[in-house]
Image 1: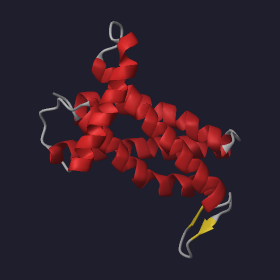
Image 2: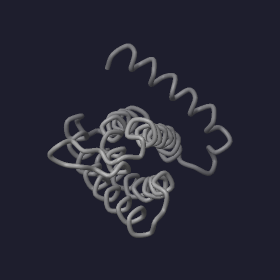
Image 3: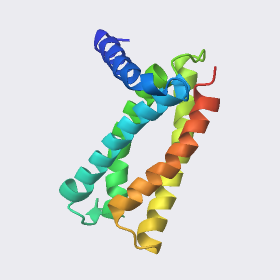
Length: 162
């Protein structure tokens, strides 16, 4: 881990510890760290989605010549690698730092869970936007909530298990 990562990790853990104090008797620290860091990554995800959907793709079909994407799917595809990396780092160093598994095993398992989450995201976005007519931004939030519940239990008991 680089010095920048150590400083970032320490700063994030200090912020989480500050907010954890009133909850320490009712919420386990791992769950609170996951919720806090996952919530921060989720808000980051929503902001990126909003920016890609409204400003980068301007709510227009994205035609790459050989394939075209609806703007809500294109926004998901482009924001995904960014939040994938920030999510893994937060899970590994903040939420589940006590895992005895080797980093490459964690990463492989993390990718498997994320792959399942990609499918959940794709299916839910298509269903919510194209079948139910829900606005893309709201559909993304609902989809994120569903995927997050699945992800927490999968990451805790599979990717970063002790």
